[in-house]
Image (tube, rainbow, N blue to C red; front, side, top):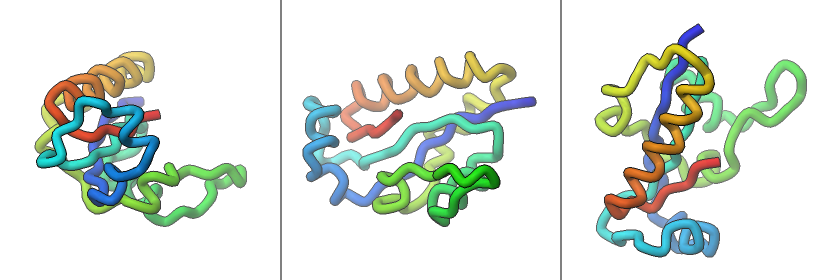
Length: 112
């Protein structure tokens, strides 16, 4: 199985939320708000899953509330060069590192 990291642009309304401000004290208001994640699916399939809000086969939520509410589009220019990733552990690590890098660059980042 292969994994992918992905970045979703969020509506700038997200940047005004308390959770965004707390997680991103050094944010640049001129840069986009983004969600960073990893998946065993394609980034496009995972984005559709987030936006549908539908539960999975086992009845669990498969979407982030933040993406469902504020998601706009994928930003492949920020992640394509990192994919595919061979192991789940590596994908989780790349997700955290990518979120950290984007945060240092001034993006308002949500990642969980």
